[in-house]
Image (cartoon, rainbow, N blue to C red; front, side, top):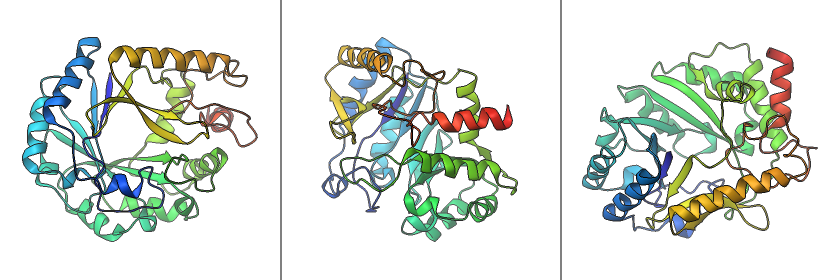
Length: 305
């Protein structure tokens, strides 16, 4: 089982593309360590925990003692390293810990303090991963220049571009095809990448049918120390659905598969269950592709396989 552990929503940035509301980003409370331990036990009793992402909000805003104790708790359920996702506007002492791998959210000029973050990445004496959100501002940037800048740091070992999804905080003017076209630019760039391009690896895994697109191996722990899943509301905006138990999670996962099996587009798709979606949503047409990025998979297969 893969865990996304979200102990706090508190953040020092207010990005226009963030899925959290300004009120959530200002919340100073964080999940009880005792309750986190209880949730982890419930999960591990059901299925072994293979991987943990820790993110917020901004993790560096949590007390050092809290983070240290959290790592001790995690060690009872899963071997390190534990992946901390951070905006890296500040370097927490724990970020240098060998038990921690860092994934840095870095969106170039689309996010405040981008030069400070780049400098902080250069100061870290450890390998890091970079996560880029494909917001409207980012996809308008010159891809060759982006690759060249990332190549300047030898400790960046991987880069992944994450798709933007409309949410309960904002609905920016983007469609799935916009994301696909941006990924194609990265794949077609003549600038050599000195890092692993994770998106290409995921495409290859999807085509090999080794990527699991369902949510039956991924569960969240929220700042309220509740189990949760990422779901979509009646207007197709993403949000966190909190659950009361593992049984609720199993029921929700079963319903997700049933919904996809009945969808007019998904049920006959060659990539069903293995597409590039991070979270299945209701596909209503393929004019602008879908959040499984079917047209990108088709294009890659025709171009490179």
